[in-house]
Length: 321
Image (cartoon, rainbow, N blue to C red; front, side, top):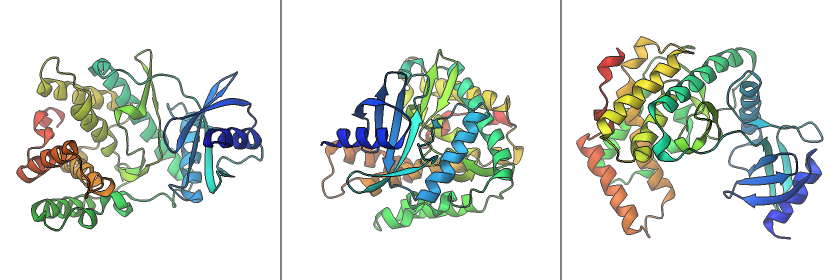
């Protein structure tokens, strides 16, 4: 049997569903087709069983309290995280397909960003209640994750960027943590991790990289994502940056207030995201076989980081204070 046939067999044996077709989306995510509805199977050992269990218990709680989050279904044996042989042992989470689509980049207008901000605010508000009821001790703080170990992956010869990374890391760690400013969050709300139905209903997907971080970071990631990838060139990017930032903050404030003491840390957290992305390139790209395009992107980031040409300069933050 090929990989999809093995997954089809395991899912039908483990879950109360009748899947007739499996399609590979990524090397960890598979779309499963049934006559009634579609599902997505996540099959991975990317995180431990305990981490995945706490993640999925949290996201199901969000779903059950009205947040646009994926719903994981129980296996026949009543497990929310299962195991199977593919042929090696891997953990399985089966999600019911969420409503909505990935919007074309040109349709990411301020009104959609306002809806996104409101959904993130609702998620954070419900999460604060959840953390008082359930343990999240197996889910890591941001600074424990490998992706933030800047000095481990950024080459030693890049002394300026290594210093910038070390300073940003230390400054962010020094920001005071309270239950109102710091907790469990999605941490990876790129626009491709957002489904939109009728330009109003928002569903956040792919919580696999969830971590404990400053809640404000969940607003910075989609803003960063939009400025890097969704601006389609109609108008100017400075006005676009201001409009989407104001919209996402306005939507968020409909559910949650952003503590005034955190707003002053917006530029620092934004810089953390920028150097985080540069770090990922060094973690996952083959440095011995870089393409011309990869070299161009790395140099683009080096120029920005070493000269402090942050895309944050496009945003007038004074309007939020």
